[in-house]
Amino acid sequence: MLESADDREHGGVGMSQRESEPVVGIAKPTGQEAREAWGAEAYLILVGVAQTYHAVITYKELAEEIQSRTGIRTKTLLHNWIGPILGWVVREAHRRGDPPLTALVVHTDDGKVGSGYKEVLAVAGEPPVDDELEREHHAADARLACYRHFGATMPPGGGVPALAPRLQAAVERRRERTDKPARVCERCFVQLPSTGVCDSCG
Image 1 (tube, one colour):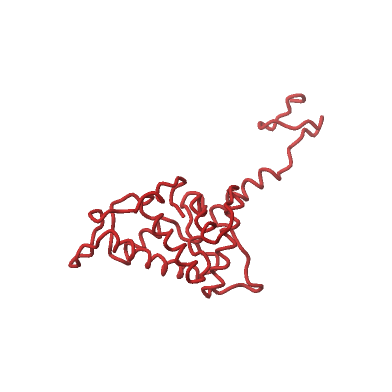
Image 2: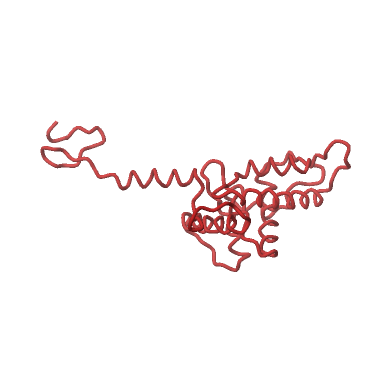
């Protein structure tokens, strides 16, 4: 998965050796060592998230937690290094037979997993999902599998898939605007403009 909507993260290797900052008193890690440490920690963090029903974590929160726990920090922009780390998590979850943990990671602004979710589908041998909302519902199903697999306390009936809260709120707002019946003039029954004053009757 990617933090940004483009694919630049897949093309790069993340941070370079000189861009990592070691814990005080510990030798500076190489870029490869940092990525391995970050990937392993990301996996553990996401397992922890999966233990709470309907929980998600943002890319920003995950990145900060990874760096805080490992003590290895980078000045590289988030979208230039988090993608390869989550790509490793996708492949490792598949190797272990775990559900796709990266479905738990969403954007701060809109609550979406983003276009990088295509890696989850590719690793699982599933066709790509071009429709954005369909992709998000696929991720919601994957999150439910994570909650069940990693021992979250589930409601009666085993729980249901859910969009991330921010995205769900946006979907409901759009639905309300669509479902709300148009206002009409009580005299001539013509649809009222946004002003609420009938153009014909005044």
